[in-house]
Amino acid sequence: DAKTTQPTSMDCAEGRAANLPCNHSTISGNEYVYWYRQIHSQGPQYIIHGLKNNETNEMASLIITEDRKSSTLILPHATLRDTAVYYCIVRAGNQFYFGTGTSLTVIP
Amino acid sequence: KAGVTQTPRYLIKTRGQQVTLSCSPISGHRSVSWYQQTPGQGLQFLFEYFSETQRNKGNFPGRFSGRQFSNSRSEMNVSTLELGDSALYLCASFDVSWGSYEQYFGPGTRLTVT
Image (cartoon, rainbow over all chains, first blue to last red; front, side):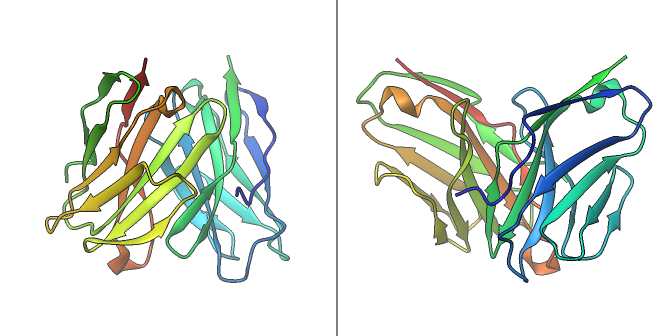
């Protein structure tokens, strides 16, 4: 059972920030939020993860609300190569629950 | 380090046959998970192995089975194939020892059942 809800699709202009929302209202206190992306049926690629603090790495930033019921993945300067399906995932123990993902299209 | 490898990359089978897929994790990773991806159902968790033991299992029929060897390589088997088993089967490995639980996915095996 997927524990996350994401919009089906989004567009973003090249060079602008892409903000991808995710709802995980039933998340438990010890469950992490992960983000992966998948480009055209390749294996999903890890982006970032967090528990309750905001996180940033070279690819993206992850903003988690204080009540942890939702989060936002931010790609600061989207490029055409960021066009992919983005999955917001809750990890419970050793099991990852993938949602249906958001298909992000970066428009030139 | 070499990434997660899966063989074969593409496979065509007939209904009723069985199939075995192979996954070699990243060197040093002892946990291997398998997922099925279909257009209708998305990515669904099949099972996870750690040190040759199945730790978690998704909601799939008993026709789907797996195992892990002492070198952490894993295989999954599907018996009595059905048309609905056509999917991309993904394997992922991670290194629990660092506590990060960052899964690395292989390229997948595309199974077509006719």
